[in-house]
Length: 415
Ligand code: UD1
Image (cartoon, rainbow, N blue to C red; front, side):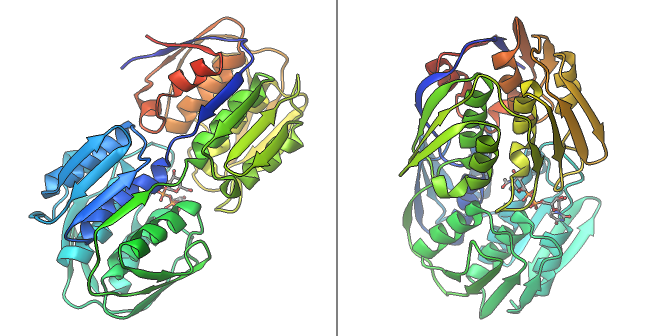
């Protein structure tokens, strides 16, 4: 695995474009197989996770062409309904194929998905939702075999507004016979993007973005071209990168309506942020103020930003408290930040961060995608050189983060 070397202390300045959303691209790529035809996707981030999705699509029999951020999927002649185990283990989002394959083939075979180790990450809500809609689920030695004799339209009440379960149920119900209602659905913008994509493809989905989604089954879908929404977590990452360095940047091609919770927290910590259509301007103070952050399902503060804001607050003035309410194992990055001199203590779901004037470069290890990004944030302000190992985790979700930071004046190199 390669590493990043960061020479800390450079104030970020300048402008960059934000890439397409990873978490919107993955389910939309899976959804493409519902239509026996051609899907053209634009603004797909060129990252490891989208490449893995292409591998799964190919393994099912799709023809896929990729040119930078454009991906064309031809799913006319899919022959398989089993997701290979090795690909399943590479990433969590592979489970989203289950709903799409079932929707098209009425049967699907897959295994427990892999992905970042940030908590237990069960798929019970996905499977319960499937069963409620008439799917027979059989589990054998880690293999999950699903078959659907007759789709039963129903109301699916989610115990928790799981993003993945909401998406999987939407995918299964798109070609289902009758009206499926998801109650306590996840309201994340990526769910809305998936619904916009599916509706453009001929589906009839109402209420995506609220906690009640109605999927009125259709018989047939059509070919579609779709532009993926901007990545709100990448946007938040660059806001924090600017904030920690006392910088001043403009982020272009963003969707400002998706990132209010992040903007509000950074304003509270002393940043000036101006919103202008699809651009964001941020000017950070010399030293940030400590703030408290609690992660919540959307529209709350996103769990994917928890480690990134955590690293940002390491050098704030005062003590910040962070509470992680979504994933129980999302504090692993803190051990690494401690190696850089950060003063953080954790107790259960809470982290107490005593802001210090300086943190120091060290050799650290990325522990997961967003945890890895948090080490970059810390490295940008640390005195001396930071070496981040295991950056493959970071490459899963960020398109050329090193290049974009270089454009803003950071000294970060691939080693
Ligand atoms: C998605 C995002 C991830 C983000 C997360 C929460 C993608 C590709 N990933 O992940 O970046 O951090 O939403 O915003 O979009 N749960 C269960 N049973 C289930 C499913 C989930 O108990 O069947 C629990 C999980 O353990 C977790 C919580 O629900 O505690 C949220 O998980 P979920 O919303 O499903 O996250 P993902 O879809 O995996």
